[in-house]
Image 1 (tube, rainbow, N blue to C red):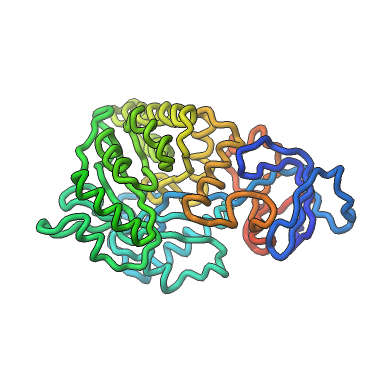
Image 2: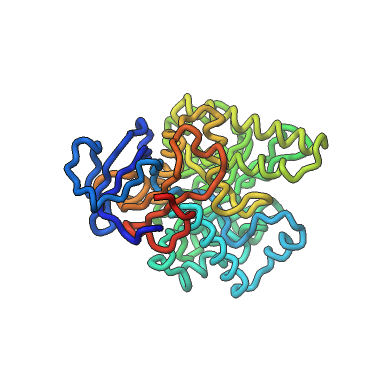
Length: 404
Ligand SMILES: [Zn+2]
């Protein structure tokens, strides 16, 4: 049986999203959808009858996917992948709905969209998204900007040759949440570590970032390889997306400038699953993944702020479940469970500018997910949360029947 609401909850283990130690036997008080207090079970003089006993569960804040494409599915079927590039808005709405539903089932409370070719996700957000109904916070870039003839057509627009990135960004008046710029190509799956040239000059890029920042927009940059990432960092972008093969110097600069890194390592693992074993592509893909995990390890040591983003919608990367898969990869690269959760919660909320989310702490929203197990092997098997509570409401938000 699942309760509709509860005022006081006993959590067997609490991971609060701050990266601090996992706390045992915690009492969480909820008032008007927010957290009223958290204390040790022994200190509290709660009434037993008003308590929701989750002493066999691990509780953590709702998760955030900092890099997704809501318009595209993770299907590996080439026909589906081809069709989804040319969707009508009506069809896009159905797909976006489906993906948001999946996110909710997996306990994801906010997503940051990296763009689609026709700007459907932005149109959806402005005309159809009912945040009160879905309770998922959606931030979107609309259409990404890329150089004509270079990678990016799937997720955005290029511009006339006599124009410039800065001019185009300046003229764009769409009601976007953040600006998405594409400054490199994709990773090669046939030659290891090949870096593509930057798409824009440092000068043009810097100007564009400045214009966006003056408009109050954060800037997310698709960049792989040393030079494309360096240009984005020097321009003062907010986050580097992917950042494969960006190298140690760039990581040092990111730590210094507090630029957030979204490694999306899961993309390589997902490709790998669908490749023919022992093929050249699968060998390169595995090397790419291992190299990225080494960079994540290094980033942690250097204090780079990292967040969990999946690039859901790319081949084999599914909306919702892939957040836990990326968490698992962070843990395999040396993050403790608690620190990895911080990346998916507090760092995500910071990046999306959601001041009430990301932490289970006094006065923040009572958004949490519960797993019926101890934290020791959390994310070892990728499973849906057993319970999801959004702003204090345990309503019909998915989760499997809990054994109370
Ligand atoms: Zn992407």
